[in-house]
Length: 343
Image (cartoon, rainbow, N blue to C red; front, side, top):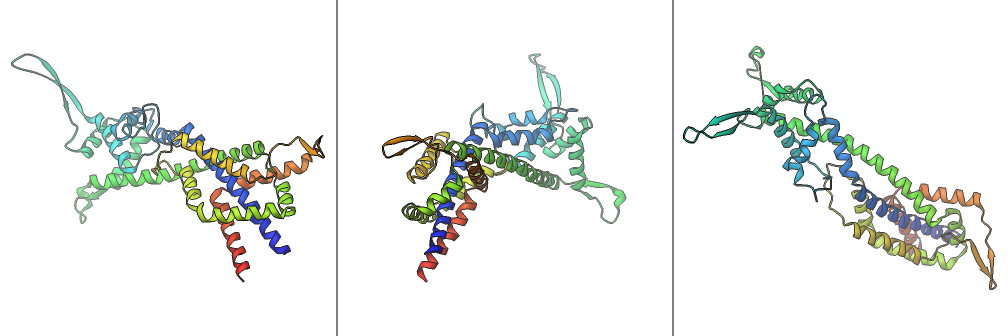
């Protein structure tokens, strides 16, 4: 019986952490959506590579290129996704424009003068190389030159003195591979920013709801009715919550090279409201209670600030682990309880 009470208390506490973590995830998702966090990180990453002070600001130009411009939800919103193929096409087009020549022709019959664009090459790769010749020395030019060299093969493998010829297909593949590797680093930057946001939101949720883990453990362990009710809720959550928790966590940490579905902010607010209602329905000893009733008299409730600070610090720290972590723990504990009852 004693072991069962301890296990049920653990399940109840983990359930609370899971529900609160899901709430933190929903709030973080709403905050990131409102702040355009993924779009801002993508913009920062592209600026680092393409905003070459010695040449054109190719980053700004890329955002007006159809490859990226058509992906905007509306004119005021930054796109949050750019694939390697789209990046390669955009960069090759923009650099290639430097190699194009503008001439003027006069119509013999009418005398009218018209502008004629003469491409720098017969294909995108030839235009790119023509444009690179007109670029000033800078990081982007060095990067592109190194990729051209990587994509080059000897004209005659038996006689290297005949020189090397770059392959357009190999160059594009090398550029896309480089971009994917770079975005792996960007993904790491973004996930660190998300973790900081989750940490801040965990503190805010803990303080606003005044979730004291020490008081929760004491209250749940000493109240069999509350404990039994929480265990039943935990069993229901295990049956239905896995896919939702994983989906929300993936959306929060998806990198700028991963396409995630757009979520309406009103839907996110509804999700937050639903999570709050679910937590309130549990009738937990949480919230700021400055007064309590005793025998029809209202008396000031004495608060142990030291214990409450430690309990709330433990809660905030626990919530940073995320809903998927606490769901896995909850699932294992519920399965352990079921196995014990069956045996």
